Every structure is written in structure tokens, then in C-alpha cells.
View 1 (cartoon, rainbow, N blue to C red):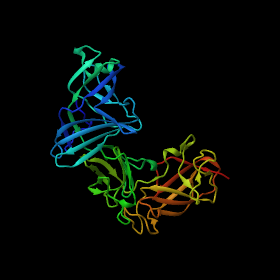
View 2 (cartoon, rainbow, N blue to C red):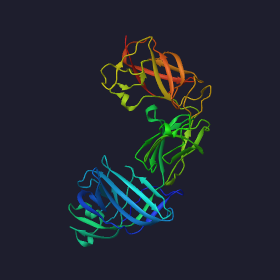
View 3 (cartoon, helix red, strand yellow):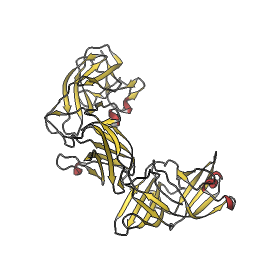
View 4 (cartoon, rainbow, N blue to C red):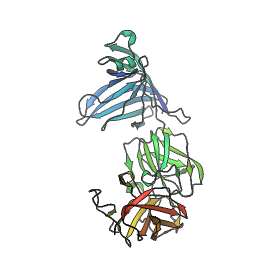
Length: 418
């Protein structure tokens, strides 16, 4: 059988094709319905390291780095039965798909190249795997029915044998949005933060930039071997994982359709076209602030710890209603240029002011904005200091904003008291 990432064919593909494995793979049927069965996977040779059980299937391969040895390691917590399950496609078919993994489990593919390099790829939950047996034997079912699908439909039946196939290590982009906690828009803008989703983006579970990744005040354009470009220009990367990369769009990117490309050790993705607007403003309003009453904008009192929320709505943070005359602080991304100019990818170290006019309104009543600009010691984060106007008290006061006279797209509320 074969193990391959279920990705669209691409000119950028980096594929390792392997022959008969050195270890066997066994599927034990758990039953199913409508022609779709489920099996438990026993994967190659297993060893317990005191925390995880690591099960390995290896084989010689060709196609990447002059060929070598491929090792595919399924890892799970504890020393018990494998939690890895697979769903079959149909009774007579030998193709299956991994069921979602459980917490603490992973699949690591390593290519030990003949030239001496060892490159690892960490699979994620979006991976589908196909299996094809080199030769297989079955128990619990008739010899003529010895197929992955029939085994999955037959509780207790097994199919076992060595495997062959290919592994496609190419990154593949599925979507690009602005930072999800700041609106998650489908278009981006110079200097804003974007989230890129897909597969094969990194060979680590996750990594966030640290001080060592900066060159002075300049943010990194590569993290853990992963890079992102948009419109051919390098973006600034602050987080990577196999399925997600967070990056800041460079300042001088042109408006209009632009290609986004992710590269890592497994190759380079096909370009994914996203729209670049001059600005794409969004205020911080994450899902955790989407409460029963509605989506609250994140607003802080000047103490920096108390949030503008109805008292008692959460015990996780201090909360209080804002009152007329209070100054509160809001945060955002994608609001455009400041004066003096501070380009993307730079830690803010100087006072600045937003070039476009930012206006905040409470239930339609305009507020005084005492500051609008980039936050010191951060990269690409805007702050707005707003004086609460005199409006009727409510825990669901509609909150809106505009930039340069254009209303922002988010629908938010805020808690105002007397």
C-alpha cells in the first residue's frame, strides 16, 4: 500500500517514491456501514520511550535528494493500544483515510538522503493517507475478500503486509485571511497581519518568534526554515506550524491580486492569489469575546488589566463597565501608514500618529480620539485611545468605527454604565 499526502498535483511538488517497506502494517476491522468500514492501525515496529509509543515503517526511496531511506513514525501517548484509526472508502477498495488524530499523537516523516541530509516533515490533522499493500494476507474473511474495505467492515478481521508508495512533501495553501482575532477578512493590506492555512508548512509542532530571531529591530523573514512571500516580497513571520503560518505583509506591496507562496524544506507551494487593499482595518475582537449578548470589542482601561465588559461575565480577567469621560484603549491591525513612516517588520521605537482619520462611535455618538497610531515595542499593532461619550447605559451599546470616513465592517458591542 502507499502513504501519500492527498494534495493537488503541482509543478512545485517534491515527491519521495518508496518501495517495499521493511516493516508490516496491520489493519484490524472495527465494523462500519454503507460500505465504509473502520480499522485500527498497527504500524510497523513500536517502542515505548517512557512517555510515547513510537511506531516506525521505513523503506528505501527515490526522488528527493538523490534518494535514501524514508521513515514514517506514528507517535501516541502511553504504552497501550494504538489510537490510530482509518476509514475505508469501499469494500473492494484498498484506499483508506486516517480518522482525526487524538491529542498527543503525531505523524513524522523523515527523509534520510543519500547525500547525508535528514529532513523531517510533521503531518497534521488535514493530512489524508492512502494505503496500498505490496502483498497482503487476511484473517477472519474469505481469501477472495482480502481488501482494506472488507476488513474494515468485518470486526476482528485483519489485513497485514508490507507497503509501498510515495510521500508528497510540498506545502499547499488552502486559504489566506487577515488575523482571525481582528476580523478574519479575505483581503489583506500592506503592514497588516495575515494567517495562511494549508499543509506541510513546517517541520515543528509550532514555533513563535523570539528575541533571537530578530536582527536588531527587524523581524525575521524566515522561521524554522519556513518563508512566506506575497507579490514576490518576503513577509515577516511570527508563527509557524504544519497547518498555519502567521506573517506581516510588507509595506510596499501593491494593491490588487497578489500571489502568496510558502516555502520550506519540502518545497514551494503553488501561488495562492489573495486581494491586497490599501487598508483592511480590523479591531481586536476575538472569539473568546463573542458572548451570549454579542461580539464585544476588546477595550482596556488605562491600568492595562481591566477589560470593558459587564461585571461578572468572566472570572478570568478583571472587568468593569466604562462610563462617560473614561479613556479606554482599543487595538487593531491594517489601518495604514503612520507619521513618521514606520515600515512593516520593524519594532516600533518612536512616537507616531495614524495618517488617516480614525473615528469611534458609541450607539452612533462620535467619541473623542486622543491617540491613534502604532504601539511602541510591538510590530504592526495599532492602539486607539478613545474618550467614552455620554450615551445611555447598556451592556450592549453598539460600537462602530470608521477609517478615512469609511465605516469598518465589524459588528461589535461594548458595556457602558452610569
